[in-house]
Length: 345
Image (cartoon, rainbow, N blue to C red; front, top):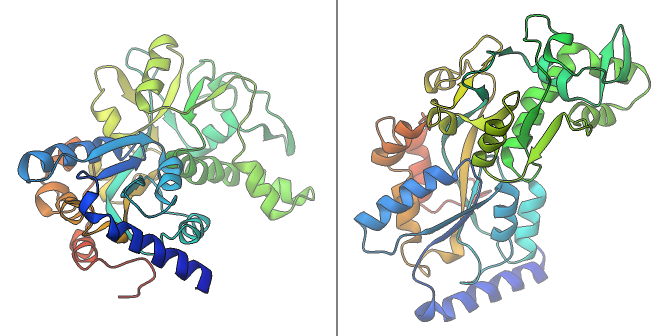
């Protein structure tokens, strides 16, 4: 670590400690809309069961939450960032440049990304190839990479309904988008042979990978920058629409939505826990260690969040759709011992 960064970090922590007597009295959290309902449940229960104010939990997306988290140390910055993906190396670097050098990574469990449509509409059984063929700007047709000609699902898979392609996918600031790109679009690109064809045509591997996760811009696909309620509203107004949701949101809206299978697997907490459902991911929150002991209740909230009675298989988060982490005990140790990323403890 450079002397400049160390000095900045030291000064920031000293400034925070110096204002401890005047620090705000509630934990502040922001980030992933997927983690939001879980964090809100825990925050409410924390406020009811502890002598600390109820934490303030905001959404905004994983990237936005981590950006706010990395702005610096002090009571004018948030304490926790929720994320539906792991923090990126460049985000860790941005944090360090702003004095946020000690970060505790907390994995709370697992969630599935599901594909759901209007409950009264057609049923779908997808593969990653279907989504690549539906959304990619260029696809493989008769051995050649061409501009995407498809407007209906059955044009590239006659087992799918004759229904116009209309997709509502997470915007790029959401952690869900990254998982969708990696486990659906990129997987479909490879499965269809499109990636191999791009490289054979002279494209570099890196450029081919970027092309594989690109999305067409002709109106067939719509980025949703808000949370899942916005996606649901779009499907309410467009019955041909198919949205990308977190499993928990779908399970709480089964009166409005029907879920598709992916590669023959129905998304459930059981199929995710067993590793069968192919589009699932771990969920995290990140704690600013410098704020522990300064912001009242911060460590207590983190410990409460990952306790057996909250995040365990019989807790309220599991009832809402979170798949309990089989390594929850190790996570509890990370929090209780305040183990920071890269500490090798």
